[in-house]
Length: 503
Image (cartoon, rainbow, N blue to C red; front, side):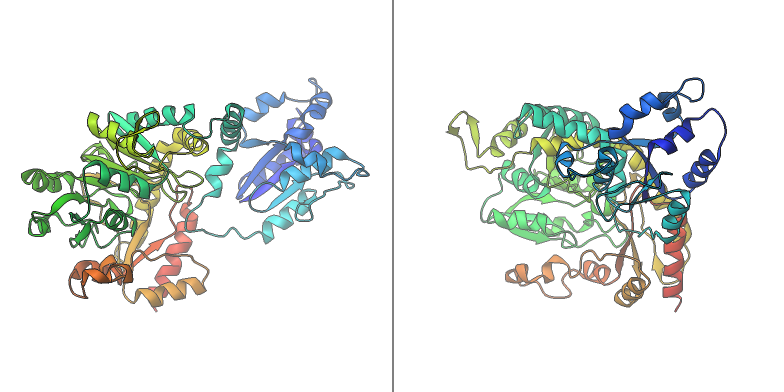
């Protein structure tokens, strides 16, 4: 998306009560992939230039237009050369350079002086020219759009944390935990420093120790099995369902032994595992179930939220997740009073009161800055989930019936947040390479499966042990997926796929 900074002369034309060319050009530009910004450094001057008889109030005009304010950084003032003739223009251009992506200042001033060389400026013709040259790359995941949408809220959140200075266990952490618990529908939320630490802490809380066995899936990110091994326990893999890619509950009973201490199903690619069946098997042996919900936060299973489906639900707020921080972050959810207390103690080195350590714990507290970011993003999360569902449905409609392509299967009692939109294709590696040559980014999860990774060679699990996971790992391909993907972009993506798979 192209950022267009509006200089005061352009803003005055837009605010004019008399129709003019600037308004016409603005309307035309609104139909393109652009984002408009009003620089705060020029607002005081703008207020003196607005004449009520000739201009609409800025506040009234803002209500009907998708325009954001561009804040000014104090540090930029020192970067302006002493001999610069127009410090407002210099500051505007320095502030513009902070925005990610491509940026141009729209101005009719022929003597505008920008400082950063990458920030261009010019009239409508310059803007049209840049827009014509601008290539909006289609990322696998779009982390820029939500950041720009929420820039004002994020800036306020950052400053509030800097103001009180409680960077660890600040007030935002407690407020975030209350909001997350209310969203999921559990009594407790215990935030931690990462999704990996959430899994480790949950396993420690239910008593997993050296020599125990923990059942999980071989088709998943390494973090779950890694946490099991970190405690000296043994990961026992169970093959997956060929349609949802989640752990197959029909294979659970044969994997349980007297050493089994817990079951950790992953809710993969955005939809929940089959928890009622899993918990039924677990209850017969009185085993705790821990949901690895790193990819499914916001999804539902039989009208219940992911993370509220088991003894403990663990999720990650890694930047690429459906609800992502701007660094590592995670959380555990439970309705169990004792487990909640235990996990809160575990995340501070096992401390139950000042300078008294009940057990060996870990350093697992969530940074206050990350909590503030997640709180800023929570208000739009439900809308983003709706958008993800729409994007997923469009993909499925466009790809359905295409030979050699299998679209995701979402169980009828599930909703998916589509953390990835993952298809299966014949000759996956060839298809991926040809799509790359056409400029389309895709990803492969998880090849090879965990039991064939060098780190787990000591388990002596060779090829053929988990045939479904092995077969799926050779065929899955994840397409660009995020809440801001347009149907036009999806048509282009699917058009490339059709050309490649049809030879």
